[in-house]
Length: 115
Length: 110
Image 1 (spheres, helix red, strand yellow):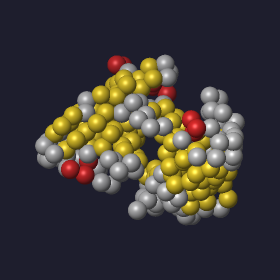
Image 2 (cartoon, helix red, strand yellow):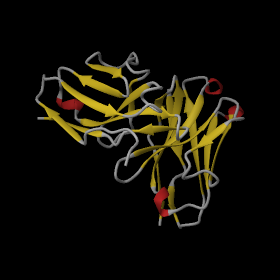
Image 3 (cartoon, helix red, strand yellow):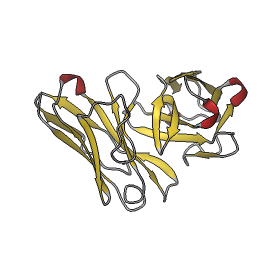
Image 4 (tube, each protein chain N blue to C red):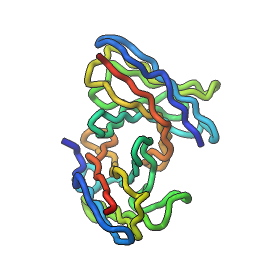
């Protein structure tokens, strides 16, 4: 199992970024997928989850209405569209696989800096 | 302030046993499974324990999890210097309708 997350960078407040995740080594279409972020101080925060066919999504309150998680099962890809970015969104964003109420595999993370 | 409470740090000598506590409430640990993650310096978190006490096949049996009421515990036996890392607990919370993490515990192997 491998998750390769990408798309992070430096963006000004109010700007947008689109993160991507390329999974391999498992049947992507059978797993819920999630994004988890880690703040500069070290704390972890669940950000978003999407079900297997993309019809159900959920978000932490602090990003609801600004972030959109999506997936393209035909292209084995997961995305996180981040709009109206704020300084407090600065973090490392990890693509993770959801399995039995846990995040069982994590990408290496992509750094988002809002400044 | 994290929903799940962990001690900021613990330490023990090589070969010894250490436990890390994770305290929550009825809306999270009291109702849902607890997971534990290990984050070695400069790397992404890695799943150690799921469903309170289940180890993925690649995880050493030196790591074990338990739960009682609204608290969970991670135990590590036969400590090695390579176990120095940050450890996080996590559970779903019904009140927040979100997965929530503890603040993390830094393990130092003296």
